[in-house]
Length: 401
Image (cartoon, rainbow, N blue to C red):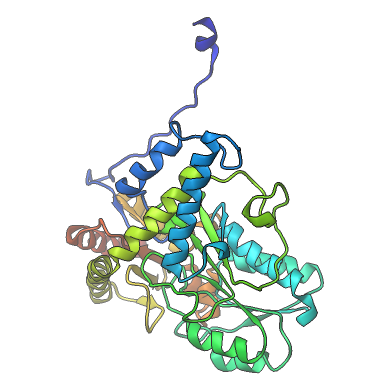
């Protein structure tokens, strides 16, 4: 008992559930992360304490773990149109993205030490491309159109010279703009380049099939579709040469060392299953909420600009507000009880303008003013209306200050 009293327990950080006016917080940052679905959590729970064995152990505890991990792999593969042996578990989207770029480029350098990357990719892809550049690879950017899509004419011109790898995401994480993946895939196959598709943001709301379009590598992350953080997967098409990113044991067919996170991969499979089964109804609900929110903002806030055009993910709306810094708008909304984002969650500590909005041709001032609102399946009409009201109020207050 004396020893127990000497243990310093971690201090719990309390997050106020309400804004300054007393209303319940409205969460509009589902593109950053989603809450774990209660059904998913229930499927995960037995693998924390009851069936806790290391999936690489040769006894009964280990066999239960490996059976659960294998079942999760089978289910994820089926939902992605892949073979189970083509699914490799990772710690999340960032690791999967890094591995796709670094592992594929290094293993296929004989095709040409040249990599083409969409200018509006997630930072995980761009940073990995920067590491390749430091290793002597020629890394060139595929420009964005003003609407936020990869410029196919520019990509076709870039592919006239040999490239070993092309990276174009499925959907942009800041604007929600869906990318022309079918056309990108066609161009890559015609010119002998591998195609990597970061589908982390798209996986929850878009039907993914690694064969339509033909992708050689594709990444997902569970926490974007109501699964746990710390669980991701990289699809690697059979026959694609890869180098490991993480050295260690023989896990993941010798390509990715590390003890399998059984509860997390079980949760990832469950979350992807529910997302696929409920996609149409959730998308219809979320799209209606987002569109009503957009209409209110454009009608009520002078100088509000919606960033990203064409087909987009159903839940994302990215705005710039003339004369207002995105960080200032975000802070005012947080105080009022609305959680949003200035862009990708991983870049919130940066004071730099959004690289996505800059790539689309926005001025640095406008790009620094971007605010992303992302709706989820549990948001309501009242949430959309109240959040829009707070945006209108915040814009007026900030322009007076």
